[in-house]
Each structure stands twice: as structure tokens, then as C-alpha cells.
Image (cartoon, rainbow, N blue to C red; front, side, top):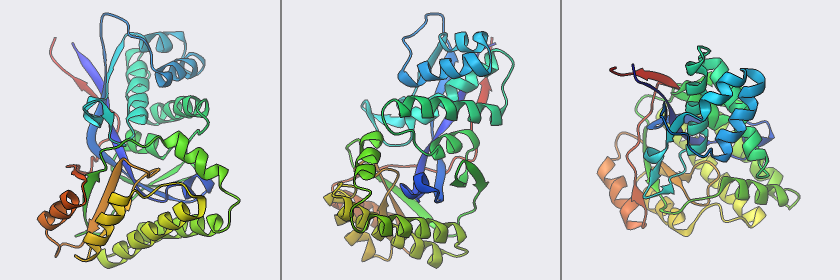
Length: 307
């Protein structure tokens, strides 16, 4: 019987950068998935699969590590014409690959998949200079909306009526490069205050019990991200995103970069009174690409097929 293991991508809505300093990140899993399935011919491993093999060899045994070499890993739903969308493709691929390898040797357990995938992903990212927070691994492992802080994961319910729309900048941001650049500017005036403001805004979003409070939190998060960009000189908020922010603010909505910023995905948070088509028009007029995404409540998962 055929089988595959898939894991969802993610969007970090708030708390980026501050999560690396002990703050909370608000992250959601989205309905675009990486998939790992056995195939006859071995494939050359990516840096993340190679790191996963190292971790699995130690933590799950050589058979689990060897199973990785038999997998085909598909991340195309997390890309557009070969360009990454910023949906955590490497994290989703790592979670799917580790899950498939553990399933192949009868050791699949969601918490175990998440722990080993996080170790593998951090190992690969660390070799690039930025090991990351693990929030993306958590989303790919557990699904849904999460509050993530210092490797602790708590399910989160966003306020009823809050609508989220997404846009793509049509350019890929390199997370490791941006994180390293922010770290290099950590001693500049205003950086610490911006990180504190980002953390506080994420806490406000997590605690929001109605749409108005959530929008206030998102607006504070967008402002704090711009402050971090200004303080470090790192272009976290591209001109097209600033244009979109002005356009949707006039409608009563809030736009902000997600994750590392500098490109990739922009989230627009709006109250139910603001129609989706008005946001779609603002996205196009700002020169961005509307990207249909929805919350994915299911984390890493096994699918079985026919013989």
C-alpha cells in the first residue's frame, strides 16, 4: 500500500525577531503542504535532509536515517514558479521527511517528529549562521494557530470575525541573511526598544478577545517592525508593503510583513465590515500578488493510498 507524510507551511503573524530573544511568536499553519513519499531511485539530499539524517542516525537508529534516502520530497505547493513564497518550505520539508522516515521504521509519533525535526532544522540553519526559533517547525508539526515561546507551544484561538488575507511581494527573502543583519545591528540606538515593542504587540495579539483588540495589536506590530528596520538599516518593509499599509489603513484594516520580512508574505488583518474585494484591489494596486491561504488545523500527517 502506498503512503506519504505531509506537513503544512506556516505564516508568522507577529513576534518575529523578538521570539529569538525570548518573546512570543504568533504563528499559523496554512493549507499548502510539503510531502514526503518513498520512491525507488534515491535522490540527492538537501542540506536539511542531510542534517535530518545526522539527527536520526543518533536518535532513531541507522534504519531511520537510511529511510531518508528513499524519499521524494515535494515542496512545490510552497513555491511559485520555483521561487519560495516564504511559507516555511524548509521547515515543512524537514518535518515531512522526518515524519516519513520515522513512519518507515514504525516510530512515528507527532511529538517525536517535531523534536527531531527541530533539531535537524536548527542544525542546518545554524550552519548558515542563524539557527532560528523553531516556530515554523512547531506550526508544521501541530497545525492550527499557535503561541510559541522558548520552544513552548500553546494552541491559540484568534478572535471570531477577524479576517486574514495574504499577499506575496513576488520576491524571496533570505531569512538567515536578514536575521544575521539584525543581529549585527543589535547595539544600535532604538533596536532594543523596537524588539520590546514587537514582543509586546505579539502578546497583545495573543491576548486579544475581540477584533478591535487584535487589529490594535497588529497595528502595533507593524509599527514596531518598521522601527526595527529604521534602527538597524535593514530593509524589512519594502516600499510596496508600505504602500499597501497606507491603502488598507484607509479602509480600516492593517497590513504587516510576516516572518523575517524583507519580501515574502504580507498579512492583512481586517474587520468583517471591510470587504475582501476591497483588500484584493489594494493588494493589486500596491503591486503585490494576492495569495489565497487558509488556516490548516492539521499538522504532520500520514496519508495512505491504494496498493
